Image (cartoon, rainbow, N blue to C red; front, side):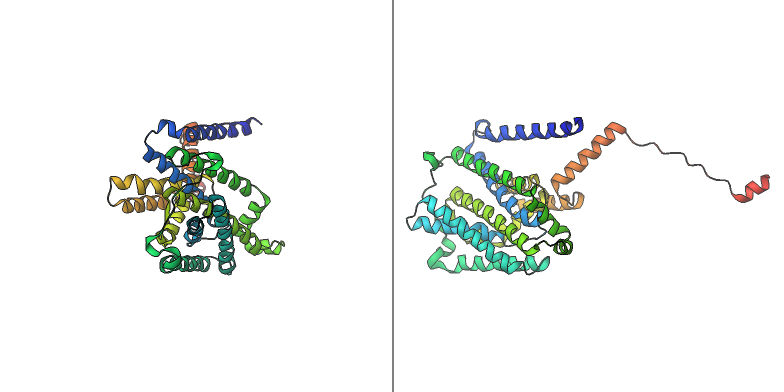
Length: 342
């Protein structure tokens, strides 16, 4: 019992401190620019957590999730442009995104590994082509502007602080949902399909259906992140659907650590900070990001969060027990020597 409380105590304290910092962030960061950066980190963390459902827990690497991310944004922007309210536009956008995720799943779950990756990449590129070429609907490369942000319960989201708290509420809801799903029987079965697909089938589990529902969950939260992106920029264009967006999301998941809740969040923070803060001081920030990614993969192949946890566990063990002393090994005398002595 004491050992369990010793493990839970520091973790609960760390979560409490993190929540306090997040809730008070606009107070101790007075610059609206950096509050907006924090908002970006939060909704890209939601996007990375959504992708992590497939990559980390399902073992299915997708390079087409930008299509789901942008589908919600484009649907909402088109409906708002036709005079519909924010609630109708947002609900319809999420419904269309989940439906698109179902189409993704039906087409891509025919394969696994490289085949799955290539199918999702192809579907993502098709959606990019539609957004870029169907100018009569999407306005092509000029994109679509959104005049206003929603005002839930009469609360204004036009300022940096108000929008940050919206992103924080959605982010916390996403983290709680992911934590519940991961610890549920469905989460255990999803990890089972990742590790032992044939054994799960032999035990009577419908592997395809488990992965299908995981795709729907991933698509829903990708759509939520896409809506936040739309309202943050009040603009969407085909660049959002491009392969770069999918690759950045995948980089967030892998760099931070797959199959963890904290990993995609840390990865999202690294990528967003590199794009928006470091790029102001370093022209070739892409090269710096690439070097960071190579170092993480080289020295912490499982990701930054699991690698750091292992390093601190090793460091604590060394500090407590010190370097083990080499034991003396007795060497048996050769038989000839013994016989000679005799």
